Structure formats: structure tokens, C-alpha cells
Length: 491
Ligand code: G6P
View 1: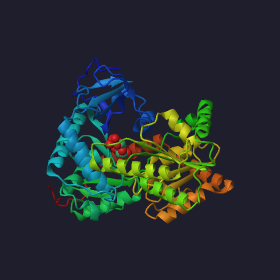
View 2 (view 1 turned 180 degrees about the vertical axis):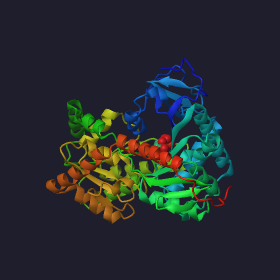
View 3 (view 1 turned 45 degrees about the vertical axis):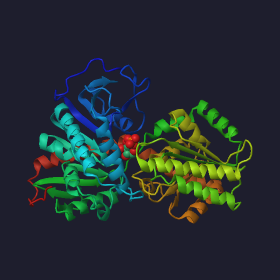
View 4 (view 1 turned 135 degrees about the horizontal axis):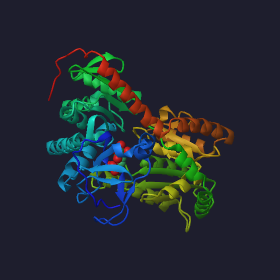
């Protein structure tokens, strides 16, 4: 639907406002104003579905996906969408620069170097202020605002300054690094103060929550009131982990459809009916360990422990952030490795690696998951990794083996996967071999136990538990005396 009826943005009517870098819609046809909008499936939207019974009182503030996108609020499928405009220059400094050239690598263990540029930071602050201004204009008195992820860490602080009546939650979807790394950021205090503007700060794992609380104390920006509560300027801030889940039913139902079964069988046939299909599905990102798993596979072929005509490796690498140098370099590295392996081991019509540098639609993804005997999720560092959970959700007959990095947040819950250290290539090779030859009963026992977890902690439960905690916390704050004051440093 085209936004033909722009709406007033400063009407202060939304009781629940989600603020995320991207709007939950994308244009499905045409790049111009006439293009149709569709809701991007999965993720936050489906997590929020059950709490959005009254969509009229809900709004989402986010970037529409291009510099020439809509600039006025519009309604799509009952959701009020408030676009945040960015110029191409802001996109390059705020999104590609500070978000994905500074914060992303630094929060992921500096697998690639993080760059610090004052002009990137200026744009980050400016765009964060714009998100906060728009949220302040649409939120009803005493509304709840839920801000998401590393691109928007200054929004909670800016919003609190504009609208102290609001209840503000912030959730970080990626890892929060140890203080030793975070303290390298020249604007570390301003970013931390930004996050501390929230009433409730959520992380994927207890380690993230621990790192953040310790950092805020060590920068002298907050005092510890209890194990999960910080105090700052008379306010109390709760810091906790809320591991995110997926809409498991959607994946289970999708993969269980007869047409998907047929498609998966046809896929296997096209691969030459191998004994085992190994699968990787990732955004093409240097955190995901795509290259290390290719290297492990190559060595196993070279050593004759796996045979090219018996085992096929399918790697889907969804194009991502290709305006950032490190992503361009990774693409070349991965393509080089795929070329090497196929060059060394292919025969006419039979290639061991099938590399797909395209995004896949839902049905194709379901067919791939169904087809895969071994799923490889081997990031060097990852907030959660939902692909691991998606694969598990699709394995309705309890078959299939998940090889999972211990550095993915998902490893906390999915401890029945074959857990690997992706930096240890010999360990990874052993795990791949073990996965291919795993005893069927053992594989089924592991998968059953992982499925229970994935279905229990589904996406809507995650969203509900965050929002419930936020509501409870804001009620208790209203009743409690102010937290002890401490002169807080500012920057
Ligand atoms: C990660 C981040 C998200 C981000 C997504 C895709 O999952 O946590 O905030 O939206 O990657 O990246 P992109 O840069 O394309 O939005």
C-alpha cells in the first residue's frame, strides 16, 4: 500500500511505540513512490503480534530503507509507521560508518578493526536525536517506548530529556562487549548515558548485562543498587537478560507443508542425492565464521575424511552492508575459498560447494532446512543467532544435527547441539565429522531436547516478558522513593 494519506505525526496518541533502525515493511515492487509495501516477515513484528491487539494505539518509528522513501507517517496493515528520513550522507556516516564501521566490529570482539571518526559520531548523534524527536511527538502521555539495538543507543537519553513522563525500554540485539573493548570508544560516556536513559535495559545474555552494569559503574555514570539495578541521578535502571526466541510455530508449519517436502526432495536430487547435506545460512558478515567452516570442509576433503561425491555443502550468504569495506573484502575471501574447493574437488556436474549469494524467500529457506542433515552455525561472536533456532524448529521428525559455536548467544540454551570453538579448526573438523556420522538415536535425543527449548521460548514470549517486566518496573518506580543521588559524570 502506498502512503497516500499522510497523517499528523505530533498527535501523541500511541500507547506503545517501537523505535528500531528499520521500519518493519519493505517495498516489494518498484523502487519509486508507487511501490507496494509488505511487512518484512519474522523478527520483531511477529514477536510483537500478540501484544498488538489494538494496533490503532501502536506506532513504529524507523528508517524506510532509502533516502527517497516516505517522510510522513502512514498506516499499513493497521500499524502506524513513522519514517525517519536520512540523507545519503547521513546514511553513509550514521549507518555504514558509526553503526557498522565502529560499533558492530567493536561489539563483536574486533574481529575486524573498528574505526573511530568524529564525523561518523556527529551523524550518529544527529540521527539518534531525530528518532527521539519523532518518538516524542507520537507517544501518548505516559506511553511505553521500546527502543532497539546498537544503531540507537543515544535515543533513550534524548527521549527521556524530551518526555520524562514516558516509560522507556531498550534492548540490545547484539553482544555487549567487555569494558576493556568498550572503553576504547572516544564517545563511551555519551553512549552509556544514552542507554542509561531507559528504565529497563535488556541484553541477550547475562554476560551482556554484566558487562554493561560494570562499565556504567566503572565510568562513574551509575551506582550499583542491587545485582540487577543501577542508580543514576535519583533514577533506578534495571539491567537484565532476555534471550530472544523465534516464532517457532511459523517455521514448524512452514517446513511441514507437503509442497516443501517435495521441494526439499527435489533439491536433494539436484545435489546428486548425497549421503549428507551440510548447510550454512547467514548474512554475509565477517562475524559468522563462513570462511572458517569452508576451510574446515576443504581440509576434510583433502584428507579424504569426507568425499566430494558423498557430502555436499550448501552455503547461503545473504548480501549485506556492501557499502562497508570489510564486507566487500569478506565477499572476495569467501568467493575465493569456494572457487578453490570446487576447483580442487569438482567433477563435471558435481561440485562439493554450492554457494548462493542471494537472499532466500521463506519457502526456499524451509526447503533448505528440511534438506539439511547438518546445520553449521559457527560465528566467532553473535548476540543470539536465530538461524540455529529456525533450523531446530523445522526438524519435526527430530532428525538433523546442529553444529553450534560456543560464541553464539544461542549456545546458552541449545547446549545439546555439537558445540564448537570456531577458532579451533581441528575441533571444528572433528565436530563436522561427528555430525555427519552421528548415531541416529543420539541425534534425535539432542534434537528433541533443543526443540522443547525453542518452542518454549518463542518470540512472543520474549516480547511479552520484556514488556511485562518494563510495566512492573515502571509501577514499582512510581511507588518507590528516589534512588540515592550520586554526582554523575556527563559528557
Ligand atoms: C543484526 C542487527 C539488526 C540488523 C540486522 C540486519 O541482526 O542486530 O539490528 O537489522 O543485523 O542488518 P542491517 O544492517 O541490514 O539492518
